[in-house]
Amino acid sequence: MGSTDTVSGDGRDAGDPGPRTPDGRSSDGGHRPPVSPLVVIAAVLVPLVLLAVVLFQVRDIRDEAAESAASEPVTAVTIPAPGADSEECLSLVESLPDTLGEANRVAFVEPAPPGAAAYRLPDAETVVVRCGLPAPPTFTVGVPLQEVNGVQWFNEPDPDPAVTSSTWVAVDRPEYIAVTLPATGGTGPIQDLSDALTAGLEAVEPRPAPIG
Image (cartoon, rainbow, N blue to C red; front, side):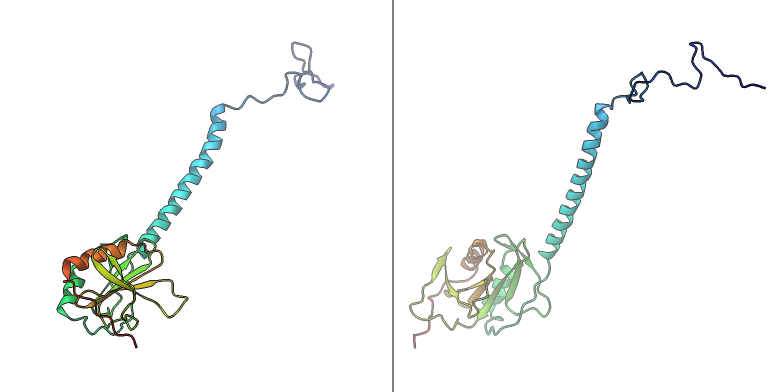
């Protein structure tokens, strides 16, 4: 039997897609329907939102890590402090404020040095206060002193030039009180400590050693 072709009403084969242009596209243009502007906007915004969420989470993790480091106990070596157990030092250490400048008071890693208090700055750098120390060996007649909020301080230089922290010693109280500050500490800690010394310990005349 011969094959029978199916012809549409307009005389074309049913399988014929219709007239085509010279480049092979159908005469209806062969164009896809236009993309909705909402789809374009969503395609741009969704990755940006996801990126913002990731960055926010990373920042939270960093903030939590920094906060944890800033509350860690401080390890400090024990140095000679003959007056650490004096009434003045015991009273001072107990009455020191919870903050010195931007530094918050934290615990020591045991064993804690006597007559001392520890603080940490937001960047986790430490501030250490010690009471009852011997007179600084370089505190001699004629050395310059700096007064801060009614307290006279002597800057005790470190023999190691690589050390960037500084140690200041209050020399006009019944006991010598030292505070060691990092380079990033600013002036807030020594100002607040001066206020605590003025309020808690009676002022005395500085007692520098004679020269030679």
